[in-house]
Image 1 (cartoon, protein in one colour):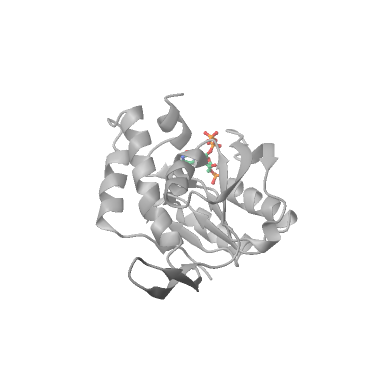
Image 2 (cartoon, helix red, strand yellow):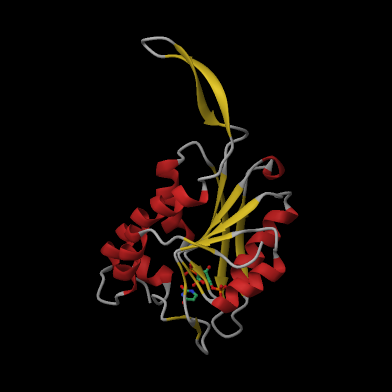
Length: 209
Ligand code: PRP
Ligand code: URA
């Protein structure tokens, strides 16, 4: 697996355009991220296995599909990952949740870990890591390293925006983990920001600077 699956759906692209606009308010940005996460969740889960279950409708008995296997795990890379997590949980309310606390040191661009909490049986579940931004990929690689250390072996990575440099680096570090995103932008700038991007996702979500 290499590269990234880009979600070209017109609603995703429309909402992403408004999110990129620096005139969009904090409130608007947060609402759009939640809305877009529903559409991205639909794409990242579209090939989940199903099993047939016997049920009785008011009319007759039938065989009908339900999701197979153990509940999913959504792994949110804090803080900005929580903006994608909320909408994903609206669609898959039974999912388990892992939290991975990481921030980028602004000078070195290396991730600094401050928190990790995940379900015990990661080895038995599909884990979908969520973080709006894949820039240098240092944070995403560290998050997946940690999940693999704890036993995860079936992982997908979902983001809103990616840089080509980050996609290449992530693919090299974790070739078994497919990336889903709404856009692969032009490049990274000298400060490790995605160009044209949308700025700092966490700051735009929470109104910090
Ligand atoms: C942002 C973003 C990713 C990371 C991406 O988080 O949410 O986690 O940067 O950059 P990278 O690919 O170069 O590692 P940030 O460190 O700003 O923390 P925050 O979510 O707490 O704002
Ligand atoms: N983190 C962000 O929030 N935005 C970027 O462009 C890069 C990293």
